[in-house]
Image 1 (cartoon, rainbow, N blue to C red):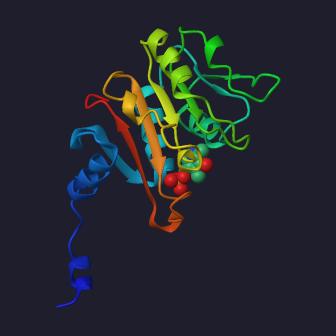
Image 2 (cartoon, protein in one colour; image 1 turned 45 degrees about the vertical axis):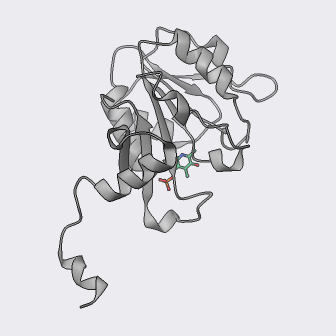
Length: 183
Ligand SMILES: *Cc1c(COP(=O)(O)O)cnc(C)c1O
């Protein structure tokens, strides 16, 4: 018997063991975890599921280039908010009549980190659309910077993670999202 013998079987379609492991790591429940083939696939599903609506979604003008690609692919209307003079994402000036908000934190390629307090201020006033925080680089920020802890408080918050950067496992294609069970 070899471990590789199991390769003739399809994997668990619900990825229960993996999701439970991720859930334990983030101190959330199994139903708060969604996994995908890299966080790019998680983002693609999220854009298609949450952002295809009348109002445009909002993301910074300097950020991860795939947000625009997914909008074009799924024909999602978007507006790019300019970074301020210090290359910071101006969360406080985001209008709330949006179709969704997405930003990378820390942002890429600026490396700028938005404090979780500022993100919570956005969540307090932006209650009618999904706020997607792409934490691909969060392990390079001081511990405690993640907003995964806010998922239990805000139903419309989705936090995406990847094993491609800080874990150096890009080839394994594993990304995931933490969010409320309905999301
Ligand atoms: C690299 C990266 C991703 C996607 O990574 P995957 O390899 O698909 O998990 C998503 N967002 C940002 C900001 C990235 O830099």
